[in-house]
Image (cartoon, rainbow, N blue to C red; front, side, top):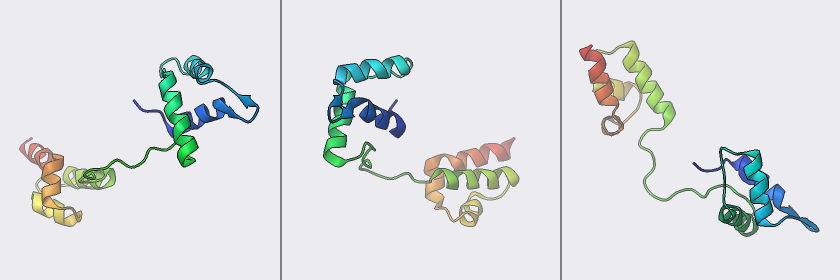
Length: 119
């Protein structure tokens, strides 16, 4: 599980600046005592510090590769449409929600619609 941006910023703040700096090991111990269920290693602190020094922020850079087929909002719209009218044809659901039929199939929403109709 990755750290939230807030936790990463907290690590940078714990590192300090100028005369008031802490060693990475100290930051690691402080963070782990504050968040015992989300322990980090010294290498994590090192990566976050290096990222902050190089780029000036601690957010993750966008991952390369294929984007999501449907975003969460589109999936929710399709699911609500299917829930309201489970007998509506899948092609019609896709057209009404401005979603590609193939994207619905790849997301598993077509199977969900079929199961609802069968019940």
